[in-house]
Image (cartoon, rainbow, N blue to C red):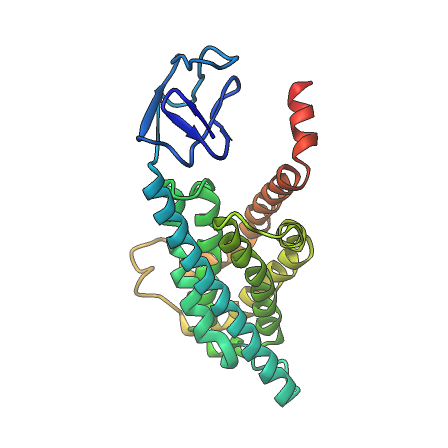
Length: 278
């Protein structure tokens, strides 16, 4: 293990074009400023996007890893139980109308809890940022809590079961990947699934969400749903959902392309480095 300018290097993470320094294990906590010299390195200076980067101590890093491992394990277990409930109901009833009745409340709980991931990104606990997690969480949560949970007429639609199965399949891959990555021991097949399965499963889920929202429009208009909340706004909830349906494909496409970008960087990192050199 090499000690560089107060930084103990266990794993390396790039913080600029000219220098690579460990951001995971540092003794003691250390801050880098634009233009700082690092003795014994080929590059003479660090170039940072922000003026200061404070590297966490090993104890804080370990605590974060333990916490993230626990959180992602709980979510993985919850989504696996949801998929099991849906499967048992489908096998026993031979019906595609029991998606919400079998696992809807559990999925509502898991999806609400997922707002913690937006906080993780905002606080910098994970490197994903908070914009895309917020977009995904907001879209799903509105669809689930404001429409499916409140409008009984759509709960027995086959599209609900299809959408829930798509969500479960994605999450029982995604959360175990995150949990095992916290331990630094994620198998390669799980990494491949994490950055490949979405290609087919995400479009299925999004089409299901849009179809259910479309089917809910007549009920929303008939019941004048959420009229009290929209009383001070010059449009109704019915109009809002129609606007969401129009914007949904474009917002989803941004996320979809972002996932492809992640896939290239995770599964083909050498190709990405070669392109940057050119």
